[in-house]
Amino acid sequence: MAEIVLETRGLTKRFGGVTASDNVDFTLRARELRCLIGPNGAGKSTFFKCVTGLHTPTTGEVYMRGQDTTGWAPHQIASLGVGIKTQVPSVMDALSVQENIWLAARRFMPVAEANRRTRDMIERLRLGALARRDLGQLAHGERQRVELGMVAVADPWLVLLDEPAAGMSAEDVERMTEILHELNQTTAIVIVEHDMQFIRAIASTVTVFHQGRVLMEDQVDKVMADATVRNVYLGKAA
Amino acid sequence: MGGVQMGSGRDIAAILIVSALLMLLAPLVIGTYTLTLLVIYGMLALSLGLIWGFGGILCFGQAAFFGLGAYTYAIAAINIGESTLPMILAVLVPAGFALLLGAMMFYGRLTDVYLGVITLVVTLILFRFINSTAGPQYTIGTARLGGYNGIPGFQTLNVPGDPDAYIWGDAYFYVCAVALVLVALLVTWLLRSSFGRIALGIRENETRASLMGYDVAARKTVLFAIGAGIAGLAGALFANWAEIVTPALFSLGQSAEIIIWCIVGGLGTRFGPVLGAAGLAYLKFLLGQQSVLDNTLIMGAVLVIFVLFLPRGLVPAIAALWQRATRGRGRRAASLARRRRAEVPYG
Ligand SMILES: Nc1ncnc2c1ncn2[C@@H]1O[C@H](COP(=O)(O)OP(=O)(O)OP(=O)(O)O)[C@@H](O)[C@H]1O
Ligand SMILES: [Mg+2]
Image (tube, rainbow over all chains, first blue to last red; front, side, top):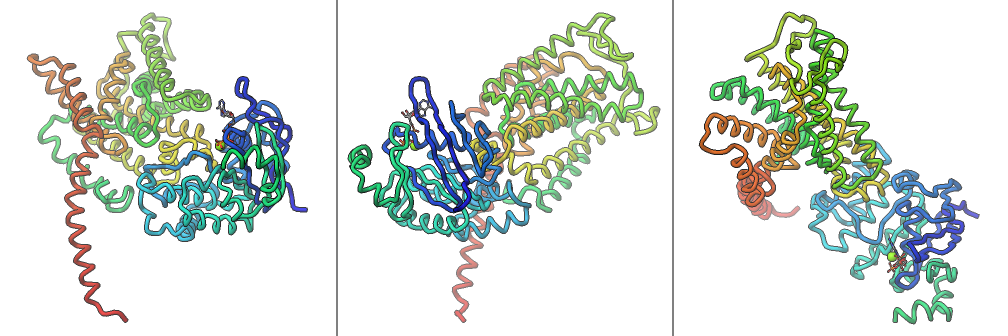
């Protein structure tokens, strides 16, 4: 079996009285593609932030490729070769598409290689015409695409995406699915997502969160057919 | 910046030509003694313009590093005699101090407001401390700190290795002007380097920068220290110009003035702060020669006018005008080219 790239043990995060993430055990193997779903407030983003270092877990541990990364700062985790996209789009608005992607690449390689990779990535994302535009001037879908490019350009071995398809057009989503599949050849991917269509399209194993806990973990079709899941999630979303 | 890319050959040639022209022509209009001060203030403004405009670090205490540089120079010059080492120390001591202070602030994840408060308080403490050292027990080596009287009578700048060959008058102006050009080139190079581009990214979005894997705190600390080193150099040049250092160098008024220079000249540009400093300092000099209008009142009015009507400052406003003028021409050229291309048959 492939190497475990991400593992949490008893991961718990409390905000005052709210237990946003409750005793989560989670395992992800190399080149696996996993979707995290669950109704609003289920604790998906909180789990995500604890893994990426944006929050420090109240109790429990996080391991990446066997290394204990609990309590690490985000830049330390990213430096391991982990690509992260937060739920709220986070880009550098006053800088160009090219500069945004170049900065992401430069962290892991010398200037010449970063230049080349940036050019390639812009081409792959079909953003050539916009390369010199500032991110602040782009449409929402384009910004999401650039952010995906920033995550992918540095050849991460683990990619964590919080709602990457939110607010995207069908065409944009299709292109992103393509890129994710390509990326998945070499890296493990965790995607937090609401969009069922999208989850079916990338057809993967799904982990269902509910009230901070893992409710179920299985193939997408089995999860969709499950009565409890329908109740807590699909029932509400419909 | 006006279509010319920062740090390109043309940009650097422009810096060199304009500054050479200014060095030749400005002394015909303004005395070199006054000009020297304008150049020194220009360098001081550039130090804040670098960390604030390009690093997003608003420091209310840039005067602290200026004063620290001046005092370091004066104290070292009294103890050592020859001016070369004191000049170097005047850069290193403020930079080292900023490294410690910056590490404390940036690793402590202070928000911008607290950063402002802490730099302000540090300036106040230094001011109070230096002010209270009038007694004979306050000495460093053979130098008495002198409290509110300041430190006079130190060795001023000499030709390196020859303590008797003082550099003063017109020659001192040219030394200061060349130093400013070198600092401007250093800043240009820095902003063009990976370090500078990453600093800009951090200014734009700290969270994103850290999610890319950049150690934001370390990088801000280093940039902060570089700014402090430049302010320290300006302080040492000031000490040589005034031939005395006093606690007023550390004053909050001085810190506020540096911030105003940057706002008026234009944040996020390299030349805005320099221009703002030289322009406003010269205005202050002219106002000082008359007594009809109150000095601070006019300075306040200038700031208000800029904040209301040119909030991005002088240099960005001029650059925008210039761009509009040249883009008009560019568009015509482009459409001409398109027409020509259309005339060329395919194949
Ligand atoms: N910083 C915080 N302080 C206090 N409570 C928080 C904080 N962040 C999240 N919570 C709470 O924790 C719970 C889980 O929130 P979380 O954002 O993880 O949900 P989610 O599954 O990502 O929801 P969504 O689908 O809406 O993004 C919610 O009840 C939320 O109100
Ligand atoms: Mg969420």
